[in-house]
Image 1 (cartoon, rainbow, N blue to C red):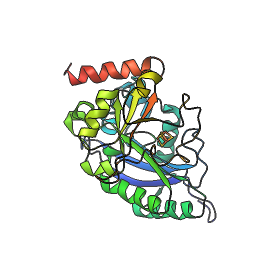
Image 2 (cartoon, helix red, strand yellow):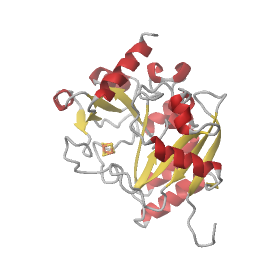
Image 3 (tube, rainbow, N blue to C red):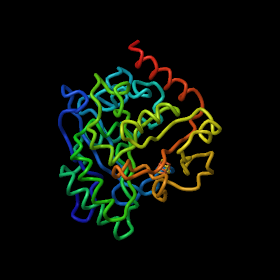
Image 4 (cartoon, protein in one colour):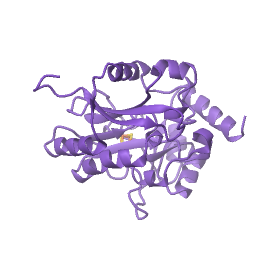
Length: 275
Ligand code: SF4
């Protein structure tokens, strides 16, 4: 790396997966310098959770992505919306040592400083992979400084519920203050609320979403007219968890089109039934 060149990204965790300690994972943070291209999230730093021993597309194909995705209904090739090609690029860069190894605190402080000067809108936890696969302290160090600097943060976990958690290894409850529970349908959202989470919820139709109490539509969705991105979203709808027990903000909902919703629900239902 030349003296003046910004690093491609940062390696902030390398160690066992919390979801399956027999598997080594890495957490990569990139797009720190405000060049995010994701249309939904805008200029937010991105973070990827990957296995260190297997190409991401191979892990999906072999259904070996549980160590980074838990029992997410979209894992194992069942309809995850993230571009696996992009994740493979991150893996390749990791393998050739392109990411600067440093601490989550350092990157959290860097993101906060860039947020303060307007070069970064915020931080996305788990652009690929479930943040709960890495220890809570990693994410706290990345997210809290950005929040204090006035930046937006977003993140989601399926590990709030045993039915989505690999081997029943549910997320550290402390994640409730940082992440949304990924839920599917109104009942799932209520269950997440009962467990102390705010829920980001998929619906099969806009009508179902609108009929659900305490549910706001994601303003980045097609149904909401793509009014905002995660970088500009805030207040009621921001996907930044439940900051404290006094945080009574609504859940957030989105309509999922095509077969993914049905497939996801079917998988979740099968898992819940132990099939
Ligand atoms: S509700 Fe806001 S933060 Fe959440 S996904 Fe939609 S735009 Fe992003």
